[in-house]
Structures are given as C-alpha cells and as structure tokens.
Image 1 (cartoon, rainbow, N blue to C red):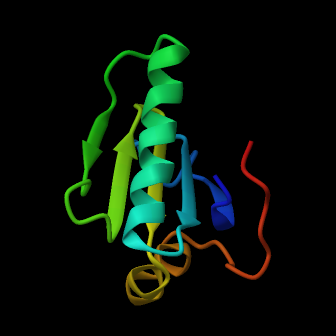
Image 2: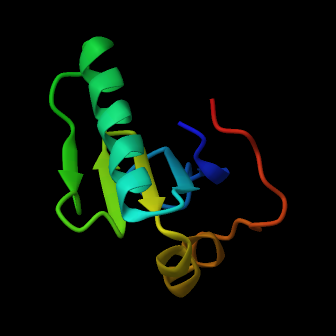
Length: 99
C-alpha cells in the first residue's frame, strides 16, 4: 500500500496496553483509509476476527487495535502534530521496517 515512514515501537515493559505499536503515514485521507481497509481485511483473513478501529470516517488518523498490536495510520501533518514516536521513546529518523 506504499505506506511511508513506518516505525515499529517495542512497548514491552513500557505499558500493558500492547506489546508493539506500529506508526505509519499515508499521503492523503484516501490513502490512509485504503491502508486501514487493507490491514483490517488482512487481520480478518488471518483469523483475528474483528479488530477495534477508530477514525475511519475522517481518515486523518486511523487507529487499529488488534490486542497486543496497535497500528496508527496518519496523514503527515497529523503525525507531526501528535508525534507519538517522541512520546513512546522512538526516534523517527531511525526507522525499522515493520513486518
């Protein structure tokens, strides 16, 4: 789906909400929505059933909660504003490819 600037943050020992957080960027609202739809379908296809999803109507920031994995898909401006990488101690320039 050509998501951009994807980072993976290990949350083990930092919080009990999840083990891993993935943060990525879509170029537009439509791109963010397309990435989210593809991921949601992939979870269903792999047998995870329904994952919790927030933010799909606006597609500025879509959150997919799959239990031990949380995925944030942002438009660039929104990602910069919230800067979750800084909050969770990950350096954005030092990126790891997520899966």
